Image 1 (cartoon, rainbow, N blue to C red):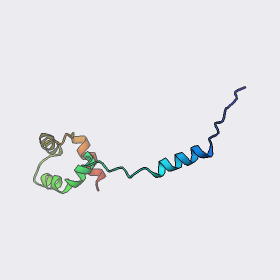
Image 2: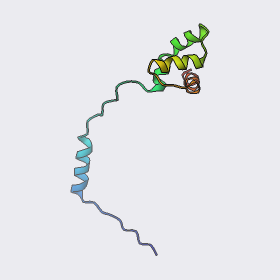
Image 3: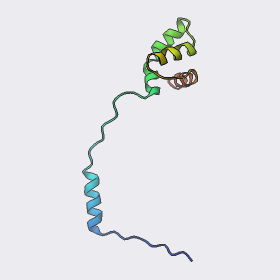
Image 4: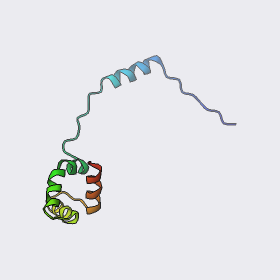
Length: 83
């Protein structure tokens, strides 16, 4: 037979925990964009490049050369999800 031991906390512990949680300040959001957010922001420019005859592979390569590391399949997925 397994005996489960239940921990009982004092009212003082509860008050201290509540006070600590209430004292937490709002965490700042990280600055910048995720890759998916960046692709969504660049969607108009990416579509303009596609309209100009560039393939997704060429666009992904161009983005990677400018510091935005992305593969063609990831670019395709993010563009599809940005609709």
